Image (cartoon, rainbow, N blue to C red; front, side, top):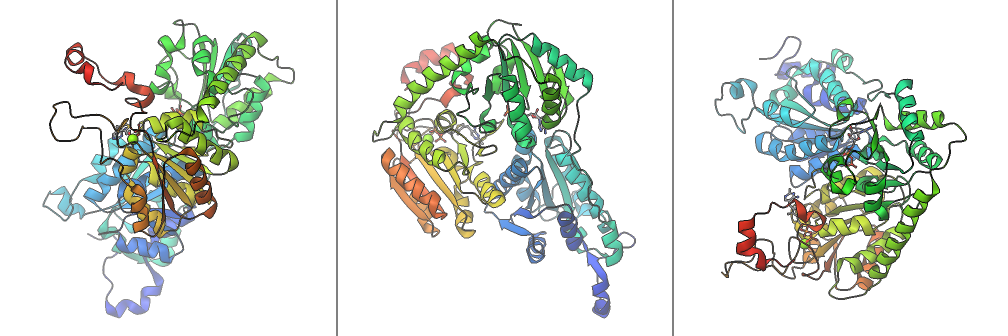
Amino acid sequence: MAPEGANNSVNAGDSANVENLTDGFHLLIDALKLNGIETIYNVPGIPITDLGRYAQASGLRVLSFRHEQHAGYAASVAGFLTKKPGVCMTVSAPGFLNGLTALANATTNCWPMILISGSSEREIVDLMQGDYEEMDQLAIAKPLCKAAYRVLHAEDIGIAVARAVRSAVSGRPGGVYLDIPGALLGQVMDAVEGEKSLVKVIDPAPRQVPSQDAIARAIDVMKGAKKPLIIMGKGAAYDQSDDAIREFVEKSGYPYLPMSMAKGLLPDGHPQSAAAARSLVLKESDVVIMMGARLNWLLSHGKGKQWGEPHSKKFIQIDIDPKEMDSNVEIAAPLVGDVGSVVTALSEAMGNDWPKPPSDWTDAVSTKVKTNVERMSANLQNNASPMNYQGALGALRRVIDERPDAILVNEGANTLDFARSIINMHKPRKRVDVGTWGVMGIGMGSAIAAAVETGHPVLAVEGDSAFGFCGMEIETICRYKLPITVVIFNNNGIYRGDDENWSGGEDPATTTFVPDSRYDQMMEAFGGTGVHVTNPDELYRATAEAMDSGKPTLINAAIDPAAGKESGNIGSLNPQSVVAQARYGAMKKN
Ligand code: ADP
Ligand code: TPW
Ligand code: MG
C-alpha cells in the first residue's frame, strides 16, 4: 500500500533514475544524522539488518550487541551522559520486547532514549494473520514510555524522527518508541523531496526558567533555615550545569547529600559533603532543597523514622516536571525549571552577603562526617583473604582516586551498597549504577556506552549475580576493543554464597551459584585478559594495570561467601510474615 509519491519497487529500467531517488533506509539514517545522532546500539535481523549496514556505511557508529536489553541499556546511559537521545535498534516482536525493558528503565530514570524497532507488515498484523514475528508493538510500547510513534510513509520519516528526538529530551527526559514497519524502509521517493522532508529539531530541550515569584518564595524559606540541607539527584547530574550548581552550593554553605549518581557533582571530599552523615542530616535538617532528586523509595518518600519528627521540615524542590511537586510530601517552595536556570536564579537572588548557616549545625555535621570517615577507613585497610567487601573496595577506591576521569559502573546488592559509600567520585557523571528501579544487568551495556561516549577508561564493579544478567556482552567489549575493566565480586551467589537448601535436598540453595566459578576464563575465550585475585593487594595491582592498559580485562575477585547481607542495605523491604518466621527463621544466615 505505497502512499502517493512513494513506491516500493524500482524496475531495472528505472536504474538510470536511481541517483535521483532516496528510500526509507536512507531517510531514516539522514534524519538521525541531521539531529546529531552519532551512534546506534543495535542487534541485527529482519527487517533492520541492512539498516545497520547502511548506517555504518554512512558514517554512523553502529555497535552490535548480543542481546537487545544491553543495547538498550547502553542507549539509555548514552542519553544520561550526553543529554542527547541514545538510540537502540532492534528487530520485531522478540527483539523489540528484549529492548523494551531498557526503554521502560530509561523512562523511569528520566533518561532520553529512542528505541527504533522494525515491525511486520501492518496489514497482516492488524488482521492478526500470523506474520513473521507478528506483534502490535506500538500498542505494547505506549504505556511503558514517554511517547510512541509509528511511521508509514517515507515522506513522514523526517517528522517522526524530529518528534522522537524532541519527546525524548524536552521537559522530563524519557524513553521514546519509534515503530518502523519493514515495508517503510524499502519505499522510494524523489531524493530532493526526501531531503526537504527532513527536520532538524531547533532547541530540542528549551531552558525552563523559574518564575521570580517562585524564586522569592524559596529564598524566604531558605532565610528561615537553621539546619538546611541540599539533596542532589541524578537529574542535577544530567543537567550538566556543574559550575552553576557548585556556585550555589558553596554560596549557601549548606551541607549536601548526593544521591548515588549525583556523586562527584561536587567532589566527594568537599567540606560541605554530608554523605558520611546521612542519617544525621536526614533526621535533623529543617529545610531540605531537593535538586533533581525525587522523594521516592530511595529517600523513604520523605517521611517516616529516617526523617525525624513528622512535619518537622520544609521542602524546596527543583524539578523540570511540575507533577513531581507534592508527590509524597508537601513542597513549601516548588521551583519548576531546569536545574541550571533555577540555581543560577537562586544564586543571584541570594546576593553577595548571604549568611552562612548556623555553625552549630555545620559543625555537628562535620564532626559526624569526620568520625564516620575515620571509622570506615580503618576497615578499608584490611588485606584479608578471602576478601570482605571493605578490603576489596578499599583497593578499588584507590584505583579511582588515582584516576578521577575514569567512569565507575556498579551493580549488585552488597557489591552496590558498599561500593556506593566507599568509592569516592571526584567529577560529575562518573558513576552509573542500577538507577531508580535497582535493576540488575545494566553493567555491561552501561560500561560500553560510557567507554564509547566519553573515551575514558571504565571500571565496572559487578556482583557475580548482577554480571550474570549481562555477561555475554564481554564479547562485545572484546570485539570493539573497549577500555573496560570488569571486576566481579564473586561470593558464589546472590547476597551470600553460603546458603543451603532448606529442604535438605540435593539441589543447591535458590540464591547460590557454582562455587568458585572462574569468570576470568570467560574473558579469555574472547581474547580479553582474565585475572583471578584473592586479596586486596592483588586486586589493586591487577585493576590499576588493566585500567592503564586500556585493554578489555575481567578480574575475578574471590569474596568471602559469608561476608554479605541479605539484599544489602535494603533487606527491610523483603515481605515478612510471622508464620514464615516461625517455620524458617532459624535457617537465615543473617
Ligand atoms: P535520584 O535517583 O538521583 O534521587 P531521581 O531520578 O529520583 O534522582 O530524580 C531525578 C529528577 O530530576 C526527576 O524528577 C526529573 O524530572 C528531574 N530532572 C531531570 N532532568 C532535569 C533537569 N534538567 N532539570 C531539573 N530537573 C530535572
Ligand atoms: C532484573 C533482584 C537484587 S540484587 C540481586 C538480585 C538478583 C543480585 C545480588 O547479588 P550479587 O551481589 O549481584 O551477586 P552481592 O554482592 O550482594 O552478592 N532481577 C532484576 N533486578 C533485580 N534487582 C533482581 C532481579 C536482585
Ligand atoms: Mg554475589
